[in-house]
Amino acid sequence: MQGKVYLIGAGPGDPELLTLKAARVLGECDVLLVDDLVNRAVLAHARPDARLIEVGKRGGCVSTPQAFITRLMLRHARQGRIVGRLKGGDPFIFGRGGEEIEALRQAGVTHEVINGITAGLAAATAAGIPLTHRDCCRGVTMLTGHTQEGGEPDWAGYARLDTTLVIYMGMRHLDSMVQGLLQAGRAGHTPAAVIAHATLPQEQRLSTTLARLADDAHRHGMDSPAIVVIGEVAGLALPQTVVSMLAA
Ligand code: SAH
Image (cartoon, rainbow, N blue to C red; front, top):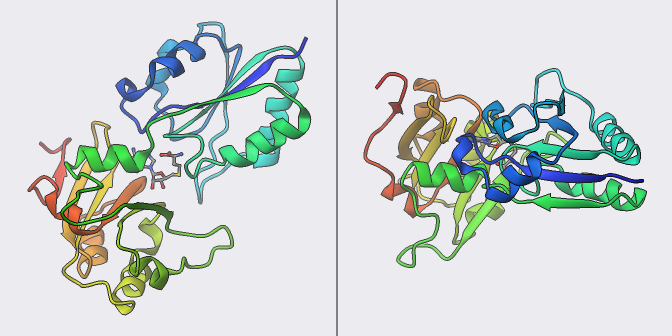
């Protein structure tokens, strides 16, 4: 008897932002493979006897290789278990969900993906930023601040888009991101925001402009995980400059 694998979006941090479906499915799992951006509070929905395997793989930290995680997932499913692969945010947004379902499809293992609220959406909302607004932008672009090859994204290409930019994993390349966008013609006074640890008690928010983004973020010690929002709508952010909820 074959089991099943669920790729489960755990949401951005606040355990109340978990979907009802994710909570139900969590309660069915025999084995849980948990990424490190997942707030452990969501495990309150898991069975007390579920086996928990930590498989964190944050950039720069000690990580579990993707191939090993995939093998683990397949092995438990083939042994008839219900496997929950818990990922921060949404499994299909910069979460390697695509790679994992390819492996599951190839192996013929039954699987299902459960959406989570992705950090880009949650961070914008936490900062009071509507990502679309018919007065000033025609859409949203979600992008990563670094590429798989370690190279730089095509900032000039993104600068030409008439959309709000929502940047994941961008904190290590803020300087070149700002330079790239400015050189490509994005105005220095374009509003920008950084939201770190969004929806968690240690959330920090910074409102600034594109020209000052890198300096301000460094000066205020904004760290990962963080979302950067660039575009007119970032000007609608809550009025505070840096708000540390811990300091408040
Ligand atoms: N699948 C996840 C993204 C994983 S990539 C999702 O859909 O949200 C990891 C990046 O997500 C981090 O570098 C950061 O840019 C962003 N991120 C995740 N959790 C966050 C949080 N609570 N606050 C701000 N950014 C977050």
